[in-house]
Image (cartoon, rainbow, N blue to C red; front, side, top):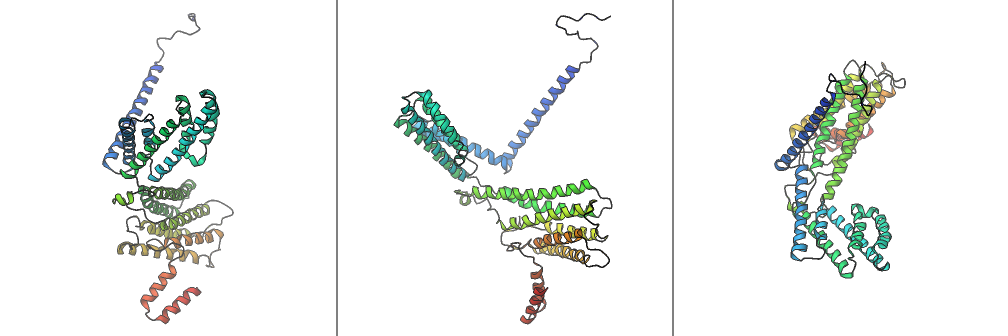
Length: 447
């Protein structure tokens, strides 16, 4: 027999009920404490890196301290020394104009001065037209200034147009003297913000370019070695092959990141005296390397796609000859070795690689070319039927090797293969007469 339910319709809690609510509360408390501990540890690691090593954390810390210093300096001049009637505008402007680049500080200052002047003049005109009726003036001006703030050329500074109009109408500071004070103090803050950003440890961003230049060849080499090892395996794993192709696509994403980093670097050098004041900052290398590796990563992607498609069970793609996987694995492994020997991130611009590195790179390139020659001969071998899959792999790897041949040459733009040049150099070393070199050049052209 059950006891009647108490008023309110809720049944009484039994003494033998498990304390699930207490356990859930304890688990939630543990999770929150772990999250707080993790955040505190991450904050400590970031602070430690900002003090001990150069990197994004130190850059952020320096820029933050510079912005704070610019705000204090602007207030000391406008508020403490001059006692300007609108002194707040000077530190307000200086604080937000210490941007990540000097060029961005100058551009933002011009945009902010334009929108503040526009919003102030529109607010003053509306106040005069409405007979100092602030409510009606706001109803007229704010829709216009908010719309103007979306103009693309004003950038992120467009929001200051309605803000300036709102302060002018709310405080009734729209006389001629008030307008001049507002503009002058805004200009003072802009000058201080730009000066602090340009003269006190001016930001120069070249670290990402160097980092990506080092990362791209290494990841390309790792991928080619992984694909070569996977081709030689007897069992084919479609998921593993899809992982190869995903990694190849990420290589092209790295090239996109490199182009963005280079644009960021170029912007950081505009209007920046840091390239002369800070000798410890190396200038980023030229963009010729980017063009070559843009093609290399694209050829790696198409080659890996061809490999994954030929290994899949598709009626449209015939099987490769039994000798082809081993030859292709040797070719890709040698191509990965060539990528590993790219030392352009440590070699001074315009200089050749060390003799040991150059020798190892040439040997790897010779192995890759020899493997490609054997792969291409399968197309004409009467024992095998020439298939589109084999022809596609031969063409894709040929394009890959053609651009890999430019690695290590400080003047090469990667648009032509260096096979003919290598043949010509070898011929010149062996034969000293002009007629012999001419004959060799003609024969090369004929081929």
